[in-house]
Length: 127
Image 1 (cartoon, rainbow, N blue to C red):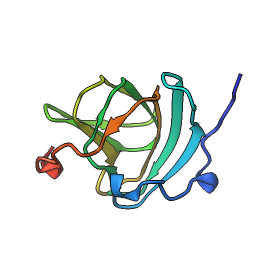
Image 2: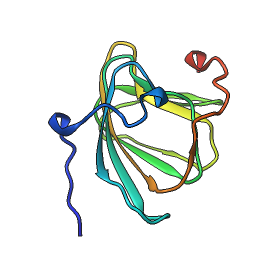
Image 3: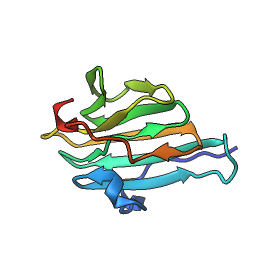
Image 4: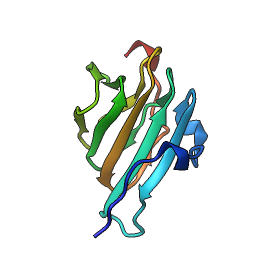
C-alpha cells in the first residue's frame, strides 16, 4: 500500500516544461516502472497555466483539488472546480489547466503509457 498527499512545497518545475504553457509545477506522487500500473501526479497551475494539447494512450482521470480550471477537447470546454473528476478517454485530443484568472491544482491519475505531445495545436486557445 502507498499513501501519498499532494504538497505544493514539494512540487518542482516539470521534467518537460515544453509540455506546458504558463507557470506550472508538478509533484510525482507515484511513477511506476512497469507499463499499465497507476501513475499519479499532482499538478499545480498558476492562473493562466495549462498543459499543451496532447493525447494519452490510456484513459486519464483528473481530480480537482483547489481553484478553478478548464478541461477541453476538440468538442467541448468545461469548467472544473474542487471535487470534480474529469475522465478523458484514451485517444482524445485534450488540454487542461487553470483559468486565466484563477489558479488550480489537480491530481492526474492514469495507467502508465505513452502520451503524444506532438499533436496539432489547432488554435487551442479557442477551445
